Each structure stands twice: as C-alpha cells, then as structure tokens.
Length: 341
Ligand code: NAP
Ligand code: GDD
Image (cartoon, rainbow, N blue to C red):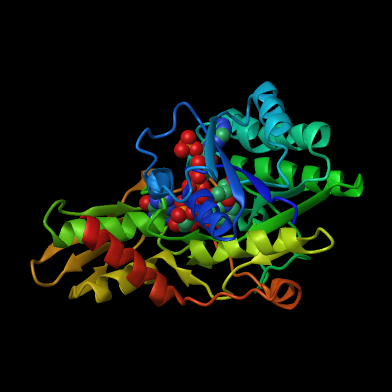
C-alpha cells in the first residue's frame, strides 16, 4: 500500500490539531508547519508531541505561508500525498486592522503553497480552508455551493482570492478542493472568538475571577458546529475520485445573544436583559450586578449578519453530516473550561 503523507499548515490551531489526530489514527505520516512565533507551549498538539506512539509519525517544521522558498523546500523534501492549507490570519475583526498582512497570509500564502505543490508534488491532493464568511451580506435563507459570494471584510476578500485561485489550479488539472466551512468551535478555539470568549468569561464571572464580560454585536446569527467533526469532512473531500467544493455546516443558526443565554442557563444563572443598543446589559438577579455589557470596540465596520449553511451536497457525496448538537457543543466547551479553570 502506498504511504499516505499529509502536510498540514496551521497545525497549532484548532482545526490543524484535530486533523492531525484524525490522520494519525488513520495511519498517516503527518508533517505540520509551525511558525517561529507560535506559542512555544504548542498547547493543542502537546499530547501528540509527547506521544511515544507517534514519535516517528508526527513531525513539525518551522515555516510560514509568506515564505515561498521555505514552502518549496518543505514540499520538495516531504513529498506529501495530501496537503491541507489551514493556516490563516483567521480573525475577521483583526483583519480590519491588519488588511495587508491578512491578504499576504491568506491570499498570497495560498498561492505560495499551490505553487510549491505544482513544482514538487503535482499529484498531491490539496484542501483549501474556505469559509462561510465569503457569503458576506447575503439575504438568502440558507447558503450552499451555488449562493453568490458578497464578502465584506479584508479577511473574507483574502479568502475569496484563495478560493478562486484554488479553482483555477483545478481547471489546470490539479486535485484541489475548497471546503466552505461555517463556524466551528471546540475547547481549542482561541479566546478571541465569541463562543470561547463567552464560555470562558461566564465561568470566570461564576468563579468571581472577573466582574463582567464585554461583547459587541449580540444579534449576528451564526451556524455553529463542532470542529472535531468538521475536520472529518476535510479528509473525506480528498478521498473522492474527483475534486470539488463543499459546504460544511449544521443547517441551524442562532444569535450571539441566544448563545449567551444557553451558557448562562447551563451554568445556573438567574438573569435579565435590559436596555437596548449600546446600552443593553445583562443583570445577574442574585447579585443585582451587570454581568454583560456592550463595548463598541467589538463591533466590525461591516458585519455578516446571518449565516446558515445547507450541507446537502456533502451529505449526498461525502456521506457527512453533523452529529453533535449546539447544546452538546456548549456542554463540551463548558466542561473543558471548568476542568481547566
Ligand atoms: P486558528 O485556530 O486561528 O489557527 C490558525 C493557524 O494558522 C495557527 O496554527 C497559526 O499558527 C497559523 N498561521 C497563522 N499565520 C500563519 C503564517 N503566516 N504562516 C503559517 N501559519 C500561520 O484557525 P482555525 O479555527 O483552526 O481555522 C483553520 C482554517 O480554517 C483557517 O484558515 C480559517 O480561516 C479557516 N476557517 C475557520 C473556520 C472556523 O469557524 N474555525 C470556519 C471557516 C474557515 P500560530 O500558532 O503560529 O499562530
Ligand atoms: N470575536 C468576537 N468578540 N465576536 C463578537 C463579539 C466579541 O466580543 N461580540 C459579538 N461578536 C459577534 C461578531 O460580530 C460576529 O458576528 C460573531 O460574534 C462571531 O464572531 P467570531 O467568533 O469572531 O467569528 P466570525 O464569524 O467572525 O469568524 C469565524 O468564522 C468564520 C466562518 O464563518 C472565524 O473562525 C473565521 O476564521 C471563519 O472563516
């Protein structure tokens, strides 16, 4: 049997770490690219690095998507059979502050990696981490592979470039896929994303470590799934005979405020929302104190107000569907946080 060798960019992130675990379980040799600037504790992949079982199967290399010479060298040396491009400046809000950097990493970085593949591993299968942010200011009830893109942030515009670039390599005969993934979360989500921020923040309030949590737009709706399940879909895309693009989502959508309500209820708070707009607050009825307030800083200059994905193509062609509900996901995140708080 031919050896399966995966190269994962973004290995230290949420998805990269779950994908590495999945592929190692499937007996792949896994190579990951980490940056010199990565958190030296490498929290998400610590268990893999410390595992004797994977000592000859899991390798890390220093690299950066913006360094094409580095990518060419690595792809030439590793000769991967599958490449997963998960690395990104992945924070939408931050992309308004660092638009050029975001374009370099997410746009040109994807080009650098596709070129390295074309030069050194042209038979490799390539996965590009595309995103539901591409739909932007849409007004459709569900978004699927046919829904027009209307990106509205430097982040999503950089991802639009990478999306079409990937398709162009496909037209030229390379096996490349776009996974259009809707929001997916887990205990490994960075604290600057809203789900993790809410879970962490409310537990810290309960444990009296902080007094209140500041949030931005409470009324944006997102389709939130579980990251560990979503990486399975990435792998499935590359096992098909023909490359294609797929929406991966749960098909359900709720507001940020409803996400907060679910966490507050699960943690036993008695509370009441009051006021509106920038003055909206959530009061803890036991202490009489505000536990959530709005801070203008967290609003985006342009916002994606509604996302709900139609994953029927993935269900039909990949036999993939989400299993965990949003309530399951919230419980997983809460339990992890309580254990580690
Ligand atoms: P994440 O946790 O933020 O991880 C991002 C990864 O990219 C980290 O490993 C980071 O490394 C790495 N990285 C950043 N800049 C880099 C550079 N210049 N060169 C090499 N590596 C770099 O993101 P995620 O949630 O796992 O998402 C994975 C991918 O899917 C991203 O491309 C994201 O845009 C996309 N996506 C995510 C979602 C979602 O809801 N999670 C949905 C759709 C699409 P360091 O540790 O060094 O910072
Ligand atoms: N981060 C953050 N912090 N978001 C907040 C806050 C806050 O304090 N308050 C409200 N929000 C709202 C945002 O305005 C947005 O509408 C929603 O919460 C989700 O924000 P994030 O968790 O930052 O995720 P995102 O939807 O912008 O982007 C994530 O999902 C995309 C897929 O749709 C990221 O993972 C992207 O990389 C990914 O492509």
